[in-house]
Every structure is written in C-alpha cells, then in structure tokens.
Figure (cartoon, rainbow, N blue to C red):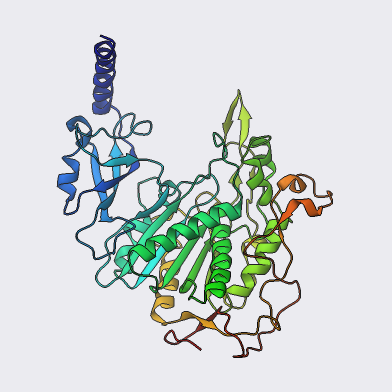
Length: 447
C-alpha cells in the first residue's frame, strides 16, 4: 500500500515536469553515462532512456571507457549527454527498467571524450580546478566544450580525457590536501594507461587553477617513483596551465566561506607564501627541465563570493584571483600568454577568433610534432641528490597564522621530499643508475 501511495504521489509530479518541459525555454545540462555495452550507437543509447526524457537527450560523445584501449571494439563505452528540459539540473535522465547503464553528473575520475583515429599517438588529460567541475569548467554557456567539440578535430590521433575529483568547498566533509588529490590522480592515470597497454604513449597535461598544482605534484611524485623503480616516468611532451596559482590565490573571501570546515585546509594551502606552494615550486622546476610549458594568465578580475540572507553568492567585489606574477613560473622552457578572461572563464573557450584556443591548440600540436620526449638519465644520487632529507608539512594548523613557528611535530615523511633551495647542477655520471626526468628532441632511448 505504501509503494502504491508513493507511486501515486510521484506520478502527478512527473506529469507536471513533463508539461513544464514543453513550455519552458530549455537549457542543456551535462551528464555522463557509463557501463554502456560494446557496439552501442547513439541511437541505441537514447533508446535505453524513458521516452519522456529520451526526447530531450543528445549524445555528444561516445567513446571507449577509460580502461579500454582506444581501438578496443569489445569493451564498454562511456558517453557524455546533453539533457535539455525543465528540471534537468536537479535530476538525471531516467532509464528504462532493466537497463544497467550508470548515469551521473559528477564526472569523477576519468571521462574519455572522443574516439581517436587509429593509432592513438597521444593522451590529452585535463584536470579541473578548485570548486570546479570536470565537465562544466570547460564548457561555455552555449554548451560548447572545446575539449570535446573542437580539439579532437584538430588532434585526430589524440585521446582526450577530463579528470574530476571532490573539489567542492561547501557540503564537502573530506579533509583533502593537494598531495592527496595528486596521489589519486597519478594512481588513476597510471592504472588506466597500464590497463589499456599504452604506458609509453606521450602525454599532454592541461590544468585549471588547483588542477595545475595537482599536475605539478603528480609529476614530482612520478619522477621519484621512476627513480626508485628504474622505470620511465610519464612521457610528458607539453603542459598547459590556465590560471595556475604557483605563488598563491586570492583567498580572503574563500577563507570566510570555508571557515571551520574541512575544506579550509586546502584553501589555506593556496594562500600566498604557504609552505606547500614553496616546496612544490622548488620540486617542480627540477623535474620539468626542457618540457614545453604554456602558461595563460588572466587579465580580468573575478567577482568574489559574499553571503546574503544566509546564502553565498558570487556578487562581491571583483579581484584578480591569480595575479600575473603568480601564474608564471619564469622558466626558460615556459611560454607565458595573456588570456582576456576572468579566473572562472579562463578555461571556458568561446568559438571563433576571440578565444585563446587557437594558440593553445597550435602549441600542443607543435609539441607533439617535435618528437620531443622525456627519457631517463643516470646520475650519482649521492653527489647530485634530486630530493633532500627535509620533509613536507601535513598538519595545516601552521597555515592559519603566518607568524606561527612550525614545529617538528607537523612534519612527516613524504615520497616527494623537498628540493634544496640552492640550484643543482646536473653533471651526470653513469656510475649508478637513478632514472631522472630529462628532455630530448629525439626518439626515446636509455642513456
């Protein structure tokens, strides 16, 4: 009886939604469908959804799942969907009974956006930023997602994926730091490439805001892991940074938003002068010598968040969230370029000549075409240590007050270590084999 009563109350609600969908101006919302059977088409996928929702769905991409080889015709598929109807933001499209497809709007983990031409020659992986979304952060208001709707045509042999993680500032009980997100990202990407049998395929990494720091930390971790296991680290050919807070983010308004919440820790890591950023910058510059880095810095200020009537709104004073000086690494292998957008929109490219897409695309394409790769070198670790014995702070209590003295109790051993402040000269010797990252305009080879 209770089930019948519930069904009776749901029916009028659904009927009301269907009638609203017919009269309201539709707005598209992005969803991901996973566990799609091999051999499915866009038409057969739409047919898996309830008729009242299926007519408002568009399949925007249908590609082999992240764990499959790009040319595997026998594995499951992953799709991105556009759902344009009233209430689409608050609920996923309904499936027909018995359909075992998974549908979500979170886009956590890796989401493939295309099926590259065979053979796939490069993996392009984009990592979203703080309080960002693995789909929405790259999508303009007219539902143009350049990673899916443009880049596959300009890089037809590239497999393009986005990576999402729990980055919300509110309603997030996870106490995560940059290093936590970096470990998860590195493990997931390496597992994906191992399962797909493409560990040696070149990689292009694209980061927005906090995503840039996750990429930096992951590459430092991968370098030391390669040194310990004597395996080749990520064969990275190009890194694109969009509004990277290398020396800090404007966190004044965010600190009020997250005060006494678990997400306060990661916000404090992003403030100017934090130990996390100092250690990470020192580490990163040692492992990317020669890799092409394209850094875009924002030119327009972003509206800050303020609280009104108990709700947080982005209507506060406008500030430059990441100043130009913070967005640049000042490395000889870096190409710094301006982006005439604010921090939120710097990763949402518009169609046409007014976008930075063209310079970004050409920069990636030339990096791939140069055959430049990362190869392991040999070095005497005792004479030229890449990582010193200092340790990384993990308790963030010291971040809350810049005048706090850091005691030994807030440190623990981390695999990445910390780079010596003084420059290290790499007079390499073949005495002992410790693979380090280097860069050569030639084919990969063991030195």
